[in-house]
Amino acid sequence: QKEVEQNSGPLSVPEGAIASLNCTYSDRGSQSFFWYRQYSGKSPELIMSIYSNGDKEDGRFTAQLNKASQYVSLLIRDSQPSDSATYLCAVAWGDGNKLVFGAGTILRVKS
Amino acid sequence: EPEVTQTPSHQVTQMGQEVILRCVPISNHLYFYWYRQILGQKVEFLVSFYNNEISEKSEIFDDQFSVERPDGSNFTLKIRSTKLEDSAMYFCAGVSGQEDYGYTFGSGTRLTVV
Image 1 (cartoon, rainbow over the protein chains, first blue to last red):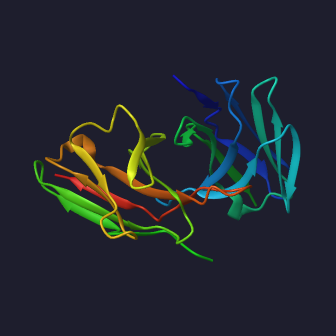
Image 2 (image 1 turned 90 degrees about the horizontal axis):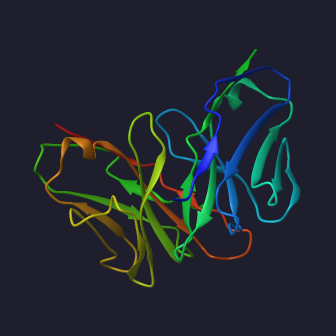
């Protein structure tokens, strides 16, 4: 059984701070990793994809991947109240490259 | 920006009835997926579809479920004889398969079985 684990939170950070979200996965063979944001009652929205060890930056977001430790993280700099949402970590597996999701971390940014 | 379109946005059905959920993927998508999310739970994979056939399905995707791409554009999920526990958000997703791809999700259909 392929597993993706996340701390459910909530993670509370003040506006302007850095939010750090973490994810571990069980299959060493995984190659593709994604972070999605989901607002309540809405569909997942892709924030970042990462495939290689190291950091990948896009605006205020930085994804970090460490395949040896089977660990993926997302940093959100200058957090805004509009960043308050559930952040889903997803890993692509199998012949059909299905996404397996973690349960998500609730982020609350306080103004 | 292109979107994955799902209809209806909300469907209420009586237990035992059949429902068809519809999705229009982005034109350059080659791989298609259905996921569901029961309220307060994880997004769960149901089935993947490529080249007009199922490439992988989960243990959730039993004989009650079927998928079709009837006209080369629309992508449907049929749920026969619905049960109360089928109540969930159902998401269609697609991906192009190109480098640095991302899976694009539709806005979802909220299915309520009463």
